[in-house]
Amino acid sequence: MRIAVYPGSFDPATNGHLDIIKRSAKLVDKLIVGVLKNNSKQPLFSTDERVELLKRLTKDMENVEVDSFSGLLVDFLKEKHATIIVRGFRAVSDFEYELQIAQTNYSLDNNIETICLITRVEYSFLSASIVKEVAMYGGDISKMVPLETAEYMNKKFKDNKS
Ligand code: ADP
Image 1: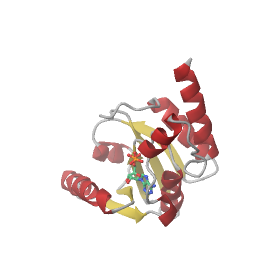
Image 2: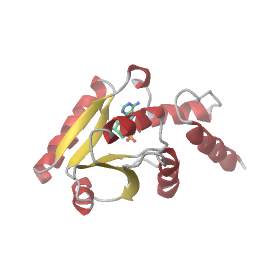
Image 3: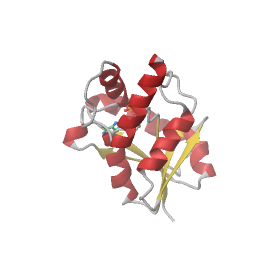
Image 4: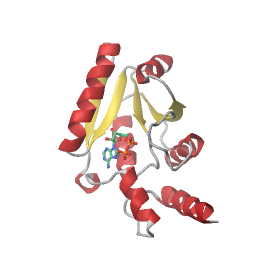
């Protein structure tokens, strides 16, 4: 059984993330979306909120699971009996970072392979931080995120205001 983990902060999940989930799920028997708990950046959404949103977004995808993790990614893979890491690649600016973490994970466990999927052109400039910035100033994020994410964002900004 080919099991892969797609790790990230997903703060919040965007159309770019969802596209990588859908495409990589076709390549493996099981895909686990791993939401990173101990994020150095202060996240907008709690880990539980990020997991819950991703579960809603992937509910019709039979071979996709969502879970959270902290600590080393390679340990999370071991726990899940996974041997593949999925990452998404937007631009050259992603390359150096992705290369560094892929090499590090390989040196920690050489049974693990990282596969990077190239983003669709329409999502090349899309990141969770851009979405947050646009939403914070009342901009339209409907083309950047699924409807469920937009609802989460609206609710979060309303709750933060009150
Ligand atoms: P972000 O950079 O949006 O804050 P994450 O830390 O959650 O995202 O990223 C998880 C993975 O998803 C990373 O490999 C990242 O490169 C990838 N990713 C993020 N946004 C996109 C996108 N628009 N297209 C393709 N891959 C993406």
